[in-house]
Image 1 (cartoon, helix red, strand yellow):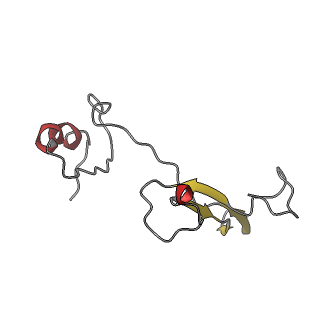
Image 2 (cartoon, rainbow, N blue to C red):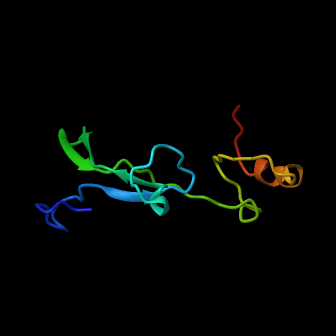
Image 3 (cartoon, helix red, strand yellow):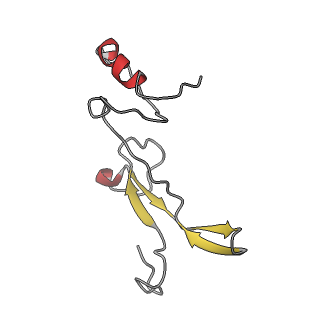
Length: 104
C-alpha cells in the first residue's frame, strides 16, 4: 500500500499486507474476511559491508515439503511439526530419518 505522496517503483510501499491463516493476535482490519491479514512496515537495517543503512521488509525466505515429498531425500536440517494426528506413528519414521546430522 502506497501513501498519496509515494511513487510506485521508486519508493518502498508504506506497508505490505500478508495473509497468515494461523494468526490469532489482534485484528488489524475491521472486516472479518481480513482477520488474518497482517501489515508489515519497512525497517531500517545497517549494512556493515558499506557502512550504510538500507530500508526493507523483515522477511525470510523459507521452503516447505510434505513428508511424502521428502521420501528419498537426505536433508542437512529439518524442522518437523509432528502434531497430534492418529497417524503419527505411521509417518514419524519417514520425516525423522531425513536429516544427515542429528542434534538434540
